[in-house]
Image (cartoon, helix red, strand yellow):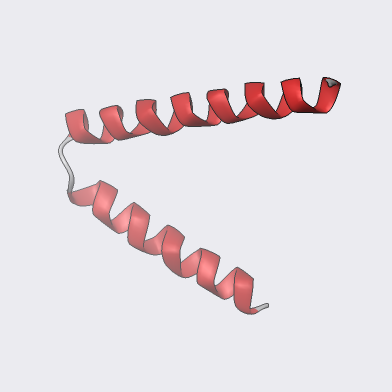
Length: 50
């Protein structure tokens, strides 16, 4: 339960900062996070097949 509260608090902080950031900064951050997630998924898939 504490983990859920902490996650919701962090989500609120992240959404609040995104609301005040310029659109270009938000898009660059979103692209960087998306690229990191793709790299992570590929590494996990390769490790699982070995």
